[in-house]
Amino acid sequence: MTDLYRVTVAELLEAADRIQAWARAGLDPAATLSNDLLARDESGAHWLYDPHARRWHRHTAAGWQRASHPSTDPLEAPASPALLSDRQTADALAAFDPSVNPVALSTAKGPTPSAAEGPALSKAEGATPHEGISHAIAGLRDAYAQGRLSSDDATEIAARMALLDRQGCFWMPGFWSGEWHRFHAGDWREAEPPAIDTLVRLDEGPRLCDNCGAQLDSGLICPACGEAVPPTVVSLQPPGAPLPPEQADRVLMGVAAYMIVGLGTIPEPATAEWDPPTDRPQKSTPESIPCPACGHANPLASRFCNACGQPLAPPSASIPPPPQPQSTRCAHCGVPLAPEQAFCSQCGQAVPSADQASPPRFCPSCGELAESDQAFCAHCGHSLRSS
Image 1 (spheres, rainbow, N blue to C red):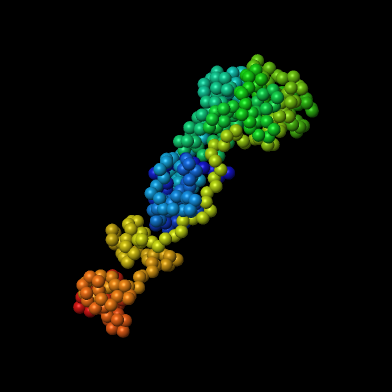
Image 2: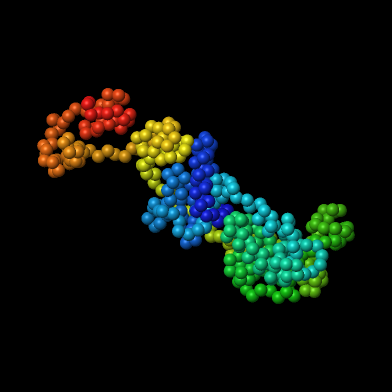
C-alpha cells in the first residue's frame, strides 16, 4: 500500500517551486516528477499539479480537465523529496514509538511490555487499558490528519496497541471510529470491548527454560541450549498472576496464529488504498516560454526574458507549434478576409486574386519572413514600413 501524507495546497505549490529551482540548477527532478505532484481530496477525486505549466487538473469521468484549484484542504499525496524536504516527522514518530517513549498501559507493576508483547501508550499513569489505547489511537489519528505521521507510520504504531485476552484473541479500537474490534477467524470484527478481568499480557521477565532448566533474565531464546522459551502469560486483574498452563497454552497458540495472519493489521485502515489514474493530462501547446533564470512567462516569440534579459530557450521541439490559419488581410484596413472574398466587407476594397498577390516580404535586418501588413519585424523589431 502506498505511503501517504496529508498535505495542504500551499505545500504542493511550495513543492512545485522546489522542482522549478532544481530544474534551473540543472538537477534531475525525476524522483519528484514521476507522480507530477498528484494528490487526492476528501471526496476521492484526484488532482494533478503541473509544476512547469503551473496548472491544476482534476480527474473526472471524462478524463483530466483543467481546474482552478482543489476546494478542500488538506489533500492526500504520496511522499516525495520535493513535498517533504521541509517536513519534520522524526519527533512526531518518536513521541508515538513505544521503544522511545514507553508508558505501560497496565496498572500492574513490573517490566513495561515491549512493542510485540502488548500496548505501550497511555493517557496517564493508572489509566485503564481501554482508556489508554483509545486515547493513543486518537492521538495517532490527529497526528496523521495534521500531516505529522504518514499512513504507514500511523498503521505500524497503531498495530502495536492491541489488547490480548485469555482466549488468545486480540482487541483494538477502530482507527477512525474508535469502536472496538476483535480479531477473529483471520479478520477484525466489531464487538463489545473485553472485560478487564479477561485481559492478559506476555511477560518476558526472569523464568526457567523447560528444556535445560537454565534461567533467562529476558528474551525468548535460552542462552544455554538455544531452545525457544515462551513468555509467561499473566493476568491484568489480578495484576501479574500467572495463568494455569492450559490457559497459557491457549493464549500462546492465539498469539502464534495472530503473528501469521494479523500482525501489522488494524481494524480500520488509516487511509483508502491509493489507486490514481494511470493516464496524464494531454500536453497542450505552450502559451509562453518560462525564463530559466527567474521563471517569468514570456511570449513565444521572445528570445530574451522580458524581466531579467537572460537568453530564452525555444519551446520544446516535442510540442508542435500551433497551426497558422490560412487567411489574408485587407491591404487597406487590415480586416481578416476569407479565401473566397473578392471585396473587403469593411472598406469595400477589391481583394487581389492569387495570381495578383504581392510577393513575400522579408525583414531587411534579419531576413525573417513578414506578413504583407506587418509594420515591424516580429523577430528583431526592425521597421518594415519602407520595405
